[in-house]
Image (cartoon, rainbow, N blue to C red):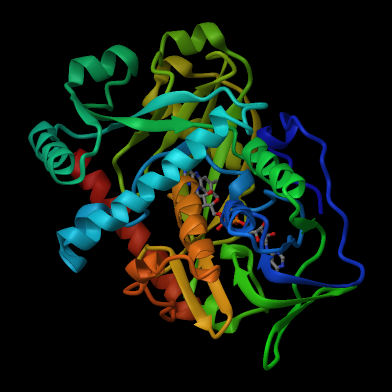
Length: 424
Ligand SMILES: Cc1cc2nc3c(=O)[nH]c(=O)nc-3n(C[C@H](O)[C@H](O)[C@H](O)COP(=O)(O)OP(=O)(O)OC[C@H]3O[C@@H](n4cnc5c(N)ncnc54)[C@H](O)[C@@H]3O)c2cc1C
């Protein structure tokens, strides 16, 4: 299946494609899923001297990795202060440091071999939608002192100079963050794996996994891969392959639009060039692209997998509610994608059966986290470190099936109501 019709697919700089698996082959490790988790794991395994086959059911970057907002920043979908409460400060700090390694990994690649089709813009401004400066200052101080986070406080006047909206109050500027073209990054990573000797197959969905005494066999429609170890990285798109994994990973949808060109209009609304978001539980995230000529805007979350009919209109309304000066803007592209969440909102990085690993479920904070867990999963599979043990508390718990999905949807609605209440 080709990439979905998104702005990223339209501005993809490489036309690389990989063959379909059509025979029986062998490798040390078979990675299932060609999103950023699978790609990073595969690349790191090659660096540890392992032979690797990566199977992607559609196209490289076809899932969330090629459709997202492109914001790369430290941390996880679960907040670090919540992790600290659960695990203690030392464990939380070790996890935070790994997440930073993920951010640095992406940054080094984007500034190095993966620079084609990228125009990275640095820093992230996360604003509050109700007057809450004192709380924000306190958490910035805590995160800077305990975790070494490079955050600065912005008072309301400074925020509104760069984001001309009466909806916004104070802000937190994260100076380690930046934004990228995620699909170009996926493809650059795949090209790199290919040049470094990894074998990649597209349109090669893994349909069954067979465990043998000494190895695993991964079956596709037209071939098999025999490998001593396998790593499952299918996130919310995995289906009918690993019931244990699929019952633990809840698919959550979110939406993105890109406007038509409107440089002069945008200049009256937004001048901050980095990542922008608000701190609501299901808030907006957006950024200027193409030299501030267009706006890429993401928002809303739902556990319904289908895309709303009037998706473009829905997000157009969201944009105009924040920036009335942009009224009449036109949407050029709209699309949706699925994020994989576990109930603990942390990635799953573990051996779920002997020789069968998973590195997945990075939720809405996957761009640094897929890199982080890819690095650590490859170390674990290649038996180079035991850093994966830091992720042991986050198990593949049952997510509750359809009832869990419904409960999650209700939880989101509750959070949205709470957000509205805070703003009032
Ligand atoms: C719209 C949207 C906006 C987002 N914005 C951001 C953001 O700005 N910043 C951020 O940090 N995170 C963001 N995220 C989250 C981030 O994109 C994900 O966490 C991350 O990309 C997940 O990567 P992955 O490799 O685990 O999964 P995916 O990218 O979903 O990849 C899984 C791949 O596995 C393949 N697959 C599944 N089953 C099989 C099988 N049986 N055989 C072979 N292949 C299979 C799929 O086809 C798919 O390509 C966003 C997500 C979405 C959807």
